[in-house]
Image (tube, rainbow, N blue to C red; front, side, top):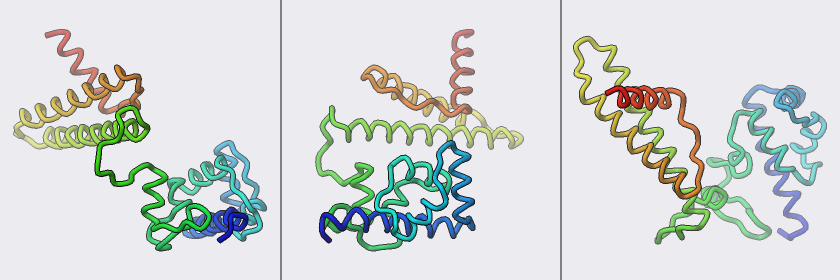
Length: 204
């Protein structure tokens, strides 16, 4: 595909995916437009119809973001839908597998060596590791809560597991802050555990 043809063709592919998801959600163009307006961004139903039918040659990033939120999907899934097309044309004349397109966009390409410590990939990897640590701590918290509902359950192991996971998470957050990175806020349930434990340590 030529350089001049690619933008419109790519935009049409995104528009068709938006229409597919919209139909799957049981929404009309007017309803999706109203959902966008409720999010504080205007995407007129006529503009939406033009996008879905290929009469709109470009899609602003801002419209992509609000449409994705209104449709309750990740923006990346509208750009490069997995499970549909085998290949996508990510650049003029450059077709790749759909997953390779996603991995390029999200910087998840498989590497044989470690990412440069000061590069963007290393920063992304640290935030991913933080998200994984948050998930692990939440699982431990759920296990402890389940055991508390079981009469006679031994709480020592569950308490220790959660304490270890929270400690590792907080050490990770402190290291990120020392390197000038601001970690995402802790989920309220984990924050409450940390504050409770901090108060217990202070009073001990």
